[in-house]
Length: 401
Ligand SMILES: [Mg+2]
Image 1: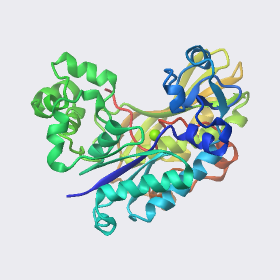
Image 2: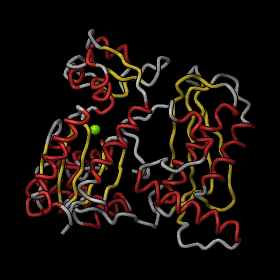
Image 3: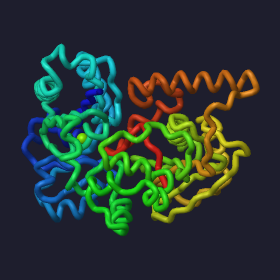
C-alpha cells in the first residue's frame, strides 16, 4: 500500500506577487501574461471572492471587481520559486514528481514514519511553504495520486486532508463525477446521459457499458470512479486522436524566424508527451491565429509515425515557411495526429538509435526534475518570457472524449 501526497500551491502566481510586493497583500489582484494581453492568468483569493477567475477577460474582471489590481507576471520568478519548493520536498522523500509549475506528487510510503506519519509530513510542508515563501499550500494525501488529488481538491484553499484507503469508497459514493481528476464537464455530461452522476455509480457501472460508450477510456473512467489509478501509461493509444500544445505570445510576431524558438519549444512539449505515452503521429499541423483573431491551420505528413522533437519541429517550420503569413501572429499551436503506438520499435540506423537514446535521457531528467530542465539551446532564448498557464502540465494526452 502506497502513500502519495500532493502539494498544490493556492493561487500560486498571485501569491508569489503578493509575497514580493507587500503593497499587494490582502488586495484583489489579477496576474496577466504581459501588458499586451488581456486575460487573467491567476486571481488572488481576494479577487476570487468577487468572482474573478482564470481565463477571464480583464474588462469582465474589472466589472466584477473594480478595485482589481493587474500585475504582469514573471515566469522567471515562478520557476525559481518552483525549484526552491522542490528542494524543500526532497527533504521528505527522494520520490518527487513535479506535476506542474505549482503541484508536485511526493511518494512518502517509505519515509513518512520518520516524520510522525502522513498528516505530520503534510502539516510540516504547509508550515515550511508558508514560512519560507509566504504561500498557502493545500496538501492532499491518499493511497494513490488520484485520491491524493481529490483530497486536495476537496480541502482547498489552505487545506490538509488524508483520505485513507478504507475511506475511499465512502468519500466517493455521493461525489459528483466532475470532481474526479481527468473528468471534465463534457465527460460528466456524457456520463449523465447514461444515468451516472456520482463517482460511486461510475465505479459500479458495468465495464461493458462504459467501454461501449467511451472505448478504452471507459475502463479508465471506471477505475477513477473506484478511486483507483488507471493503468498509468496505457500504451495502445486507442482513443487518442491528437497531441498538441499552443501558446499566445507576449507580443505579436511577424516572421517564421522570430517564431522558431517557440516552435521548437512547442514541438518538444508535444514530442515529450507523445514519448511518455509510447505514441507517435504521422501528421504535423500548425495552428496560426493572427492579431485579428482569424485562425487557420495547415498540415503536413511525415511518412512514418514519430515523436522525435526535431522531426516535428522541422516539419512545423516547413509548414510555417510556406504558409505565407499575411498578418502579425498572436498564437501558434503545434499538433500531431494520425496517432499510433511507436514504443518498442528499435531504430535501424545508428544515427536514429543515438537520437532515441538522447531523447530518452532528456526525458528521464525532465520527468524527475521538471519540464525543460534539460532542453535545446534555441528554446531558452525566448521561452522564459512566455506565459505558463496555471493549467499547464508536463504530461497528459488529449483524448477524444
Ligand atoms: Mg494550485
